[in-house]
Length: 147
Ligand code: FES
Image 1 (cartoon, rainbow, N blue to C red):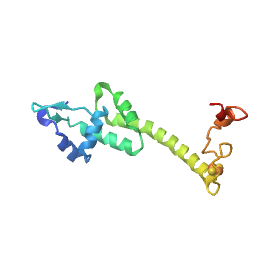
Image 2: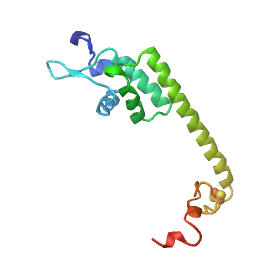
Image 3: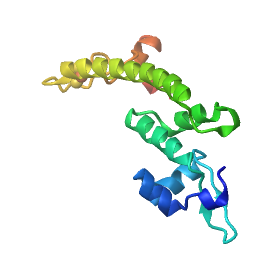
Image 4: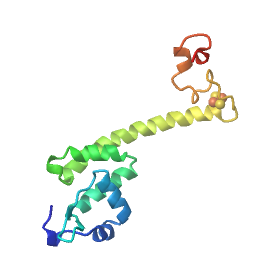
């Protein structure tokens, strides 16, 4: 943490990062940011938090859930702000996750194409209604009537 006279208030952090005060407080409640308190019991943030906020925002834009961002930041020694190398490694990992999500969404779009003009929403026929063919795995008959 930076010396208190170099530290930023939440308002200064918001102005410098372009992120609303409410969002910064939310990130802190979620364990993504840390602050210290000055003599007047006001939150103060080290200047390195600016880079940390940038990483959080970029990761969010890439669709990375906050819990995953926090888990990644927690892997850094001494809760440090990501260095260039850290960010390079994290962005590579998140790119792979983004590729997987894009592939999943593309498959869903193709399945949805099959529903256009159909309207059956059948457990047996509609791939979106029963994507893993759960009904077939439960065997023949009427397994949903047993409960
Ligand atoms: S609604 Fe008929 S296949 Fe999806």
